[in-house]
Length: 88
Image (tube, rainbow, N blue to C red; front, top):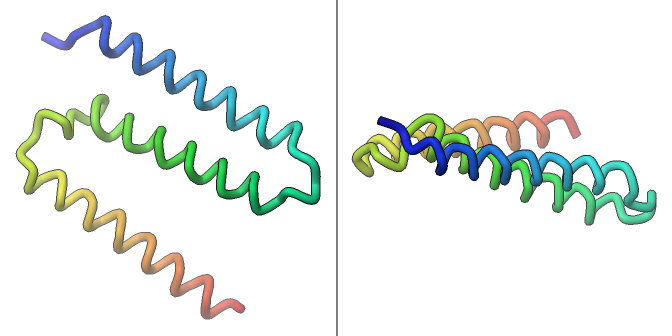
């Protein structure tokens, strides 16, 4: 059975990260756009890792499944970068 306490802690941490993202977006001065972008991307990556690791149970899976999921993420990043490069 799932560890309810662990999932509760992860839920609270995800809520805190979401609140931090909102505060960064709301109160960061306009001149610091790139700092805000990097902060939001870092926080979003942390949330995605937590969700994939615990709520999608990748922590308990064999490493080969985790590597397969990571290869899909890398493909998405590569395709997005390529699409962004071709637009410019």
